[in-house]
Length: 329
Image 1 (tube, one colour):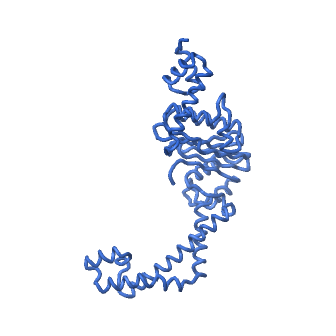
Image 2 (cartoon, helix red, strand yellow):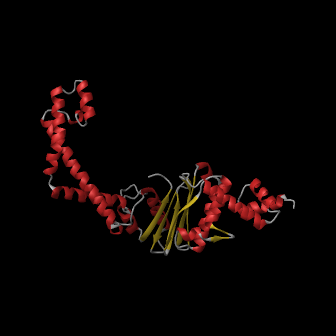
Image 3 (cartoon, helix red, strand yellow):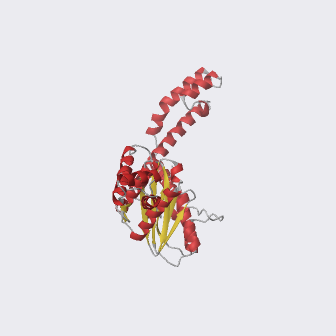
């Protein structure tokens, strides 16, 4: 059976496969669209399998909100060239629209979602076969609330959602908060919403950092007391180079080595843990302030207002947010 241009166009519109791939599949299937479609799907799966060990670090992230439901969908690929391709972006929009319409509960459910004759995952696999690149439906996030706002950052690598309790909330303020979430990457709404394990980990890091600061301070004080500039003896490499330059005498170099070898253990043994824990708690507080949404400085204000001040002033009740990015952070 002869394959016509109309047949090729029809199957290409259905599958998104390349023209020559469609023509070849139709010829092998003797014009049977169902068989040809299955051939294209299997070839896409084969190509995807061959590229499974490749790194897919580029891609497209898009968000959308309709009638109190918002979703973010991210699909990864290997190159920026493919990520910016109109057909690739259109595919992500197709998946996002399906997510908005059918509201899957998680990423696995989204992958299994039927969109026409194919699942979402099959659509991505077929596109992988067309481009010859590894592709992965990698992220899915959603929110449901009386009001949900979506923000897509320029370049399609970063998107955010914000859920609002009051449906009549000022849209400009809400969208500003969506941009805040995208730009400042908060880890939680407020300190109460930060997981205890995160707080415990940050406090432990702060304690160790504070203890090390106390030890370093003791070493520096001992060096100064010996008449040695701490900057000239902060490592063995610097001691050697600064001795060669004449900035340290041989005697000072040896004295600096002795101080660096002995003082840290003495200083650690003498550490005031009550003081350390107090400083560490302050560092934890700073971490929570910088990384929780309501305590962050509002990026859209010149008046050094906090997000919580903006929310209160405009009577906006944020209840949750989501953020998905392909950027390295």
